[in-house]
Image 1 (cartoon, rainbow, N blue to C red):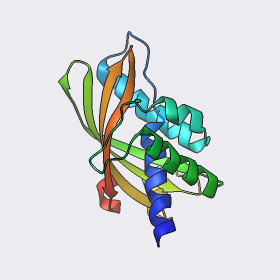
Image 2 (tube, one colour):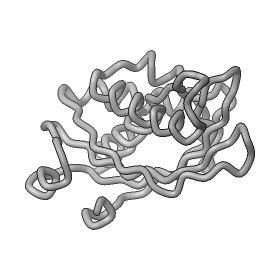
Image 3 (cartoon, rainbow, N blue to C red):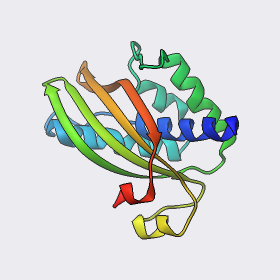
Length: 157
């Protein structure tokens, strides 16, 4: 039971934290969307180093977890799961300040390729909602806070 929860949390973190900024010509919303796409790719390629680089050194969440704690959770998830496939849906992107973004991301994590929402209906996946806060630092978006909880299939539609 605890291992399953840890797997789910790690999967979500990987999906959300493996993000990087776009070029300076892109709008802030495009940069944030690219951050999510990069996180998704990093999770699928099991690249812990890229994941770590997407998390701010001063990361702190409401549960008292730090960057090191989140990286450790991600490392455990990568170790346990040989195949990682992620399908994300972004909603509620807002910019409370020019260098700050808040967004909700739904992530489906599975061991098989998820090509679209129809395919998701026919497989078992761990579903999560991530509420993220990003800060642009030195031109790159980094995760400074995250909350997550299980999601339902209908949240993806």
